[in-house]
Image (tube, rainbow, N blue to C red; front, side, top):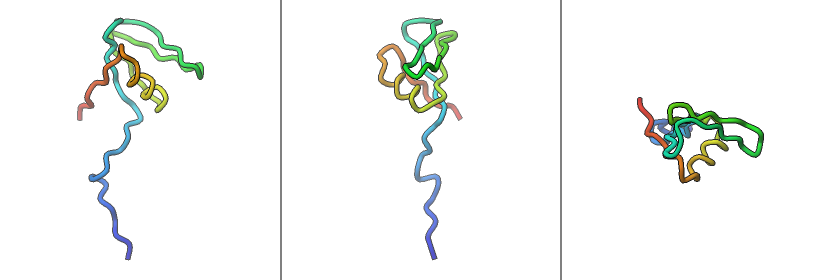
Length: 68
Protein backbone atom coordinates (compact mmCIF):
# COMPACT_ATOMS: atom_id res chain seq x y z
CA UNK A 1 0.00 0.00 0.00
CA UNK A 2 1.20 3.45 -0.86
CA UNK A 3 1.34 5.96 1.94
CA UNK A 4 -0.41 9.27 1.48
CA UNK A 5 1.76 12.28 2.08
CA UNK A 6 0.08 14.91 4.21
CA UNK A 7 -1.11 17.86 2.16
CA UNK A 8 -0.72 20.26 5.08
CA UNK A 9 3.02 19.59 5.32
CA UNK A 10 3.74 21.16 1.95
CA UNK A 11 2.63 24.72 1.34
CA UNK A 12 1.04 25.22 -2.04
CA UNK A 13 2.58 27.87 -4.24
CA UNK A 14 0.05 30.68 -4.54
CA UNK A 15 -1.01 31.56 -8.05
CA UNK A 16 -2.02 35.07 -6.95
CA UNK A 17 -0.06 37.49 -4.77
CA UNK A 18 -0.67 41.07 -3.69
CA UNK A 19 2.18 43.57 -3.64
CA UNK A 20 2.47 47.04 -2.13
CA UNK A 21 3.99 49.62 -4.48
CA UNK A 22 6.25 51.70 -2.23
CA UNK A 23 6.86 54.37 -4.84
CA UNK A 24 3.62 55.03 -6.73
CA UNK A 25 -0.09 54.89 -5.90
CA UNK A 26 -1.03 54.34 -9.52
CA UNK A 27 0.94 53.05 -12.52
CA UNK A 28 0.96 50.41 -15.21
CA UNK A 29 3.65 47.72 -15.45
CA UNK A 30 4.18 46.29 -18.95
CA UNK A 31 6.01 42.97 -19.01
CA UNK A 32 8.24 41.79 -21.89
CA UNK A 33 5.55 39.23 -22.77
CA UNK A 34 3.08 42.07 -23.33
CA UNK A 35 1.11 41.40 -20.15
CA UNK A 36 -0.07 44.49 -18.31
CA UNK A 37 -0.42 44.87 -14.55
CA UNK A 38 -2.17 47.87 -13.02
CA UNK A 39 -1.22 49.39 -9.68
CA UNK A 40 -4.32 50.83 -8.02
CA UNK A 41 -4.34 52.49 -4.60
CA UNK A 42 -0.72 51.44 -4.19
CA UNK A 43 -1.42 47.73 -4.66
CA UNK A 44 -0.77 45.34 -7.51
CA UNK A 45 -2.25 41.85 -7.80
CA UNK A 46 0.10 39.49 -9.63
CA UNK A 47 -1.75 36.60 -11.24
CA UNK A 48 1.01 34.65 -12.97
CA UNK A 49 4.28 33.13 -11.78
CA UNK A 50 6.22 35.50 -14.07
CA UNK A 51 4.52 38.55 -12.57
CA UNK A 52 5.15 37.32 -9.02
CA UNK A 53 8.81 36.63 -9.80
CA UNK A 54 9.27 40.06 -11.38
CA UNK A 55 7.63 41.98 -8.54
CA UNK A 56 9.53 40.04 -5.88
CA UNK A 57 12.79 41.09 -7.54
CA UNK A 58 11.76 44.75 -8.04
CA UNK A 59 12.89 47.12 -5.26
CA UNK A 60 9.69 49.24 -5.43
CA UNK A 61 7.39 46.34 -4.55
CA UNK A 62 6.86 44.61 -1.22
CA UNK A 63 4.86 41.40 -1.04
CA UNK A 64 1.95 41.55 1.38
CA UNK A 65 1.28 38.63 3.69
CA UNK A 66 -1.63 36.47 2.69
CA UNK A 67 -4.66 36.74 4.88
CA UNK A 68 -6.71 33.75 5.54
